Image (cartoon, rainbow over all chains, first blue to last red; front, side, top):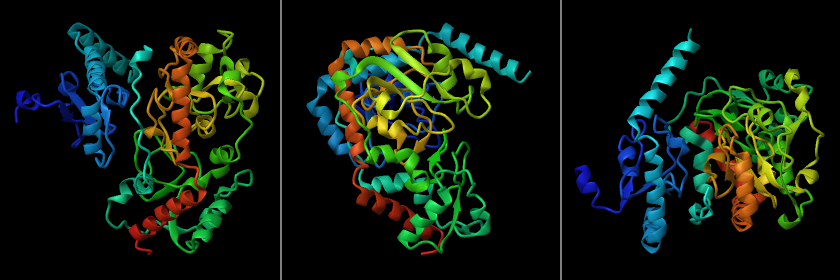
Length: 116
Length: 303
């Protein structure tokens, strides 16, 4: 399925593989809701800063509550839309290319400073 | 933070089975482990772990726990102190540190320190009768390189605002440079006179977090990095506690938000209390702990 196809759906699951779900970034930037368990890995995207049920809909680690959560979503569309909005706002942070470049440069500068 | 942005979705508590899986960590899904490194709880090597100054008598206490469950003759791998590094999948610990999911978590390794004030509740008063102030006291544990550490909190907010009353209650672990940040030590009953309690990690988890979440006051904290029997990483920010930034720069802003939104604050306190109810049934807690140990001995081919 292409990303365009996936985006035909209201609810997108994100689940980690070897490390971070590489698709999480565009999913959170989309008009669909991200459903996932608490991320265990963290990258440039600062996954551990995402707040459950605020930036994404929290699933149990064993996914046993998936059906229940879909029902909740279908009954609470305004709240789902709010969560999507919060997710989009989170992704906004990374959109300024110039700023991203500055941050990366500063990280590397400090890295080299620390290792002398 | 905008109050209308707080989203409350009913938090589902965990079933005993899910908790057992959590406490076992990666060992739950792993195959049988090599048992060569395991030793008897009654071995000389472990008896030496009982420091004469260990007021919690962790070794003695844990031997009693194992005896109660009938496991006193089994072999284990165990670490008694605050865990600040990665351990093996089959090491019994009281906590896991940041970034590591390994280690089998047991409740009764430092039971009194973490749980006595949950089961023997301190004297608490209704939220409405408390001072509209933030309070924190604690020792100089941890270090300045930790995420959201005590030293950052105190150097940033000591005597800065009359509604933010934070200071070290004692100097420990050679942190004499922080003597100027000492404030009067307060009892739990005293701390509970305040609406807003900060929780901040030291060497490992904040041992007061458990009773704070069970109280009529609001817990304010950065994301916890240590995990214990309390399952800290399962707490949801702004649902079970009010989230602070890792550098505590938003403390005053959050205090103002709280004073303007008492209903939301009360809801968060209610959620925290509900979370703690998960641990209220002592019989069930022991069943879970026994089951964790049982699976531990099964994975190490001792059962």
